[in-house]
Amino acid sequence: MVSARVATAADWPEVVDLRTRVFVHEQGVPPEIEQDERDAAAVHALARDDDGRVVATGRLLLPGDGGTTASLGRMATDARVRGRGFGAKVLAELHRQARLRGVEVVELHAQVTARRFYERAGYAAVGEEYEEAGIRHVTMRRRLGCEQTRPVRPSA
Ligand SMILES: CC(C)(COP(=O)(O)OP(=O)(O)OC[C@H]1O[C@@H](n2cnc3c(N)ncnc32)[C@H](O)[C@@H]1OP(=O)(O)O)[C@@H](O)C(=O)NCCC(=O)NCCS
Picture 1 (cartoon, helix red, strand yellow):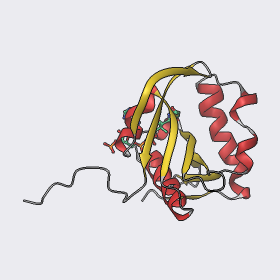
Picture 2 (cartoon, helix red, strand yellow):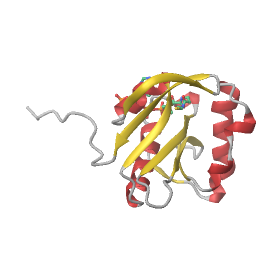
Picture 3 (tube, protein in one colour):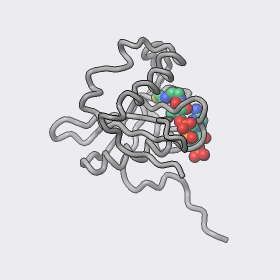
Picture 4 (cartoon, helix red, strand yellow):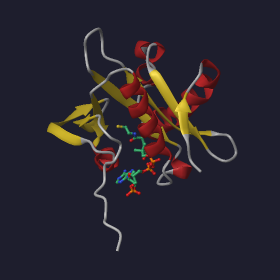
């Protein structure tokens, strides 16, 4: 069963390795902006495959004092295992961590190719598309409530 948890300092090299493969090697993001000073204060989550490899990650940037909106980013799943629920589990764990810290709204800059992934997790686009690090993005937002994001079908 796929599960996700908060990353510890010991996990960090593997998280960096995955992010580098996905964002720098696959997407061409400059390495000097892929990691930034906000990583130190962020909450990072990860999921491992059955062999123990880190295959998905993401980070949550908490609001400052009195704020209730957090930013989510650096969502990455190893290309070999996309579409198997690892990203969704990481996202759900970051939402759980956000709720624990009193966050009410999560905002993110979604690559347009990942828009559907976030919509599946309850996010809605806000405003027009724009370019960031040479990639088309759209801002998306989700209010944190219950984790149910899909219509419940009544059983027959
Ligand atoms: C976006 C990304 C993190 C998704 O991770 P993933 O592990 O493949 O996602 P999951 O398997 O958990 O998918 C969850 C749901 O979203 C859907 N989904 C995931 N990626 C999708 C995509 N690119 N387009 C459409 N639907 C997508 C899945 O079909 C699944 O739907 P379901 O609930 O109906 O089954 C992954 O594709 C990735 O790393 N992409 C490259 C880096 C990137 O673009 N990161 C986002 C930066 S904003």
